[in-house]
Every structure is written in structure tokens, then in C-alpha cells.
Image (cartoon, rainbow, N blue to C red; front, side):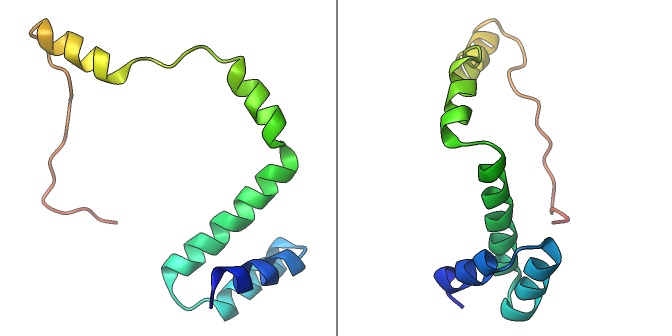
Length: 92
């Protein structure tokens, strides 16, 4: 099933249970299920908050921290810059 076909099926659905049923019966692989679920979530979020309102909120937030700069500064000071965990395998 192509994404536009899936989108039209979801657009017709008005309740979460209907959308869940459409996803269950029309999408066979897990990646498409994830995509379909995310599409529904994004559509719902867009209804709650417009892009214009979101942009206005972002404009009022403080600037983000310079991540790379912070790592370089720690490294230059001889301090640990990154704490990491190395795994043989991931459970996901």
C-alpha cells in the first residue's frame, strides 16, 4: 500500500479506533504501521497547534547550547567531554 492510499484511508477515519482498525487490516509490515501511526499523531498535533503558533513559540525560546563547542571546551580543559556506553547488541 502506498502512503497516499494510506493517508486517504486515515483521513476518512474520524476516531482512533477506526484508524487503528484501518492500520491493522491494511498495513502488513511494522515500518508502515509506525509511519501510519506517526502520520495520525502529526495530523492531530497540527490541529492542536498551527505552524504559525509553533513558529511564534520557537521565536520566544532562548538560544540552544552550542553542543559541539561545549564538547571542545571540555576536551581542551582536559575533562571528560562525552560519557558513552558501548553495547554488544541492542534489545530493540
